[in-house]
Image 1: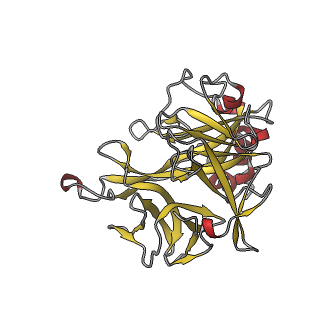
Image 2 (image 1 turned 120 degrees about the horizontal axis):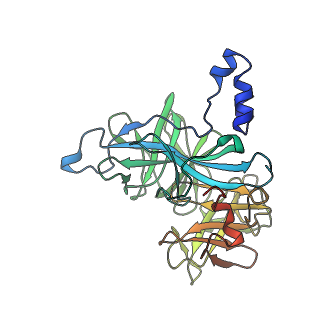
Image 3 (image 1 turned 90 degrees about the vertical axis):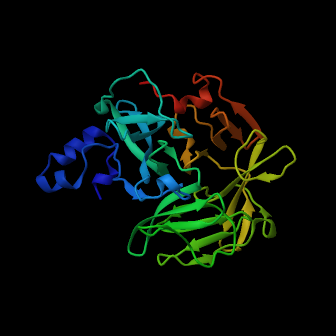
Length: 331
């Protein structure tokens, strides 16, 4: 429990130096990775139908990195481990494209590192890219162990049984997302209804459709909410696109059993990557705007949507103050 609260390599090394049991209980590298889980592609071709042509890549992590000498504000980085070289590498925040940077090495003794979020994709081993058959993949604790669980582009939820991708029974909706929150697994349907997936892989409706229950709200706790892109006609669209002109944010009020439209995220900001979404405290990152949503367009250009005035700013340079959180000084 103590080890998971350490934020810098210096603190970690001090902890590990106390005794052998403490040393064995904590990893020396804060940029951790997970072992690969061998899978099949969702729709394998005739020449690639054997298990092992894909794997669950859980090596992409988001970290908050701050200088040890000034830990109040830092940067957001995304990293994984290169499968060929085994070396740590930085990734584009909103995709899994490796970044080219000037630094050949990073002295971790100069920085505090804390993990924010991990992200998974089903990776096509032959093409060395994510399997396009999935919208979102998570690693869920079901049936007594950790299993890959994903939403396909057909809107169906599947889990990896160890041999094949199996569709969950009794799916009465088309799904767009699956998330882990508080150790529980939830799925979001295209109509905005929330479903709970039990540890036995049964699925139950948890909340009403979006259009049947919207009420007006103000600032709500933004730890669990529904964010949808809207086009220039005010219509909701399933993902960010060239037509995206803004976002609407909703929070499920469990007491009322209704979706409440959120007008403000308070001091938080939301980051929407292709493989995961999460909120951050804006004050902990350089230039990060509060009450804003960071996302990328189809050209992988970073944009930020400000809920206060419904405006969108596109990144033209990492020198722009509101995008400095994505450009660490050691680049």
